[in-house]
Length: 282
Ligand SMILES: [Zn+2]
Ligand SMILES: [Zn+2]
Ligand SMILES: [Zn+2]
Ligand SMILES: [Zn+2]
Ligand SMILES: [Zn+2]
Ligand SMILES: [Zn+2]
Ligand SMILES: [Zn+2]
Ligand SMILES: [Zn+2]
Image: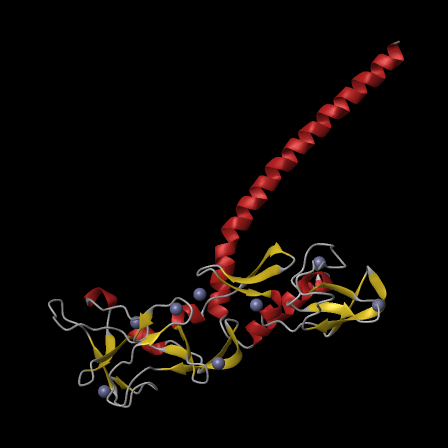
């Protein structure tokens, strides 16, 4: 049974590696080798090009948008030279060399290997200046304003509800080295980072402070958008699976606490009853 895979010009033949084979069958999708236990492969023996059966059948999106490189779409790149040999590339995220498929931006020479391309960001608050889009597996982070969510152009803030605040690239009143404070939370802000700003009143606040109310819905919209584009349904699934045990243990801890509080309340109730009885008897 032959197949034609989009990444290779020759038809690929189904091979069942023998137990004592000396050939190294390195799969071009997952870069793992293949012993007999890994099952059959599709291969072109002339080019030493192999794909595990499930890897050959894997649906790889021809193009993705990735939060680590929001400026351009990344194109699936089989990474083969004209003669069918594998080209080595450098993953811009995990900084390792690979010879298999990548997602590639030719304009910036930006590459992601398939695993890094499946990374899903979570939002982490470090402080109002650093609300980060964090890729937990690799520790990469993007500022909130660098993250691929669409920030509203104007917002209203309860500390300044007479005027709209406008998203502004940078506002540095006075000297660059003067202290700059957020007029919403009154903590420091970096003058070179974007703010929500009212020019008339010179009111400037952190991007985070400006949209803190809308943020959950913005994130949700972003997540839904990701899902709709089907970009990484699998990755999302994995993300929630990772999250589940943490949520379960949190639930347990909360339940224990709840029990303790209930017992405390009961004890107090008893005390109150005793007190009232003693008052009646007096
Ligand atoms: Zn494979
Ligand atoms: Zn070939
Ligand atoms: Zn990374
Ligand atoms: Zn990588
Ligand atoms: Zn690019
Ligand atoms: Zn940034
Ligand atoms: Zn603030
Ligand atoms: Zn104003």
